[in-house]
Amino acid sequence: MTGILEFASDYWWLVFPVGGVVGGWVGSVAKYNEKRRKDKIELERIRASARTEQLRLTTTSLRQLRKTLEQHDALNARWFAYELDLATLIEYPLMTDMREPLTLAFHRARVRADDLRPEEPAPDATETSLPPDEFDRYREAVAEYAAAFEAAEREARRRRQAAFSPVEREALERARKLIGVASDTGATPAERQAAYKKARAELDGLIDVPPAAAERLEGQIAGALEPGRGDD
Image (cartoon, rainbow, N blue to C red):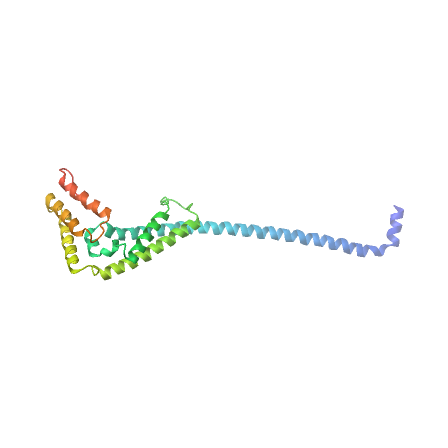
């Protein structure tokens, strides 16, 4: 012990540089620990921000998904007005004429949107499991469907029956009137059936009658022909 005290008394001046080294080392450790603490806080902030962003995207996607589904339904309803109504289709025959580039583009866009359509979310859903990339593809497909439909309908309404000869337009007009009789619940079942057959004969080779329109009208006529059944 005496030796240590003697050493300390003889070399007291070493306390200052050694103390400086030790103090510097302690200060560096403290700074390092503080930096690590701040880094951990920042990392957790980034992770929390990412989780919040993901939740925001999921919530937004659900709202936008419902909006896109409604837009899709509205477009289909506009198309069904042609597909299910022969009289309207006769007036604007380009809507089913696949020789027309705009019509072909519209039907391709419609099929693609239908193929990409996801399942309807439950009314009480608060989020959707639909991946964002799949939703983006579906939304783009519906947008293309809307643009293609607008272009095809605009051209169909502009040209109407201009692509047909006078004789063909007369046949289309007769078919339109006959369809009116076939759809008239005030006409007798026999009159309706005869009118429908004549209308199909007039339209043969002029326009493509969508199966849905034919089935709908045929079902109505069949209901009138069978006792106890009314029109659909």
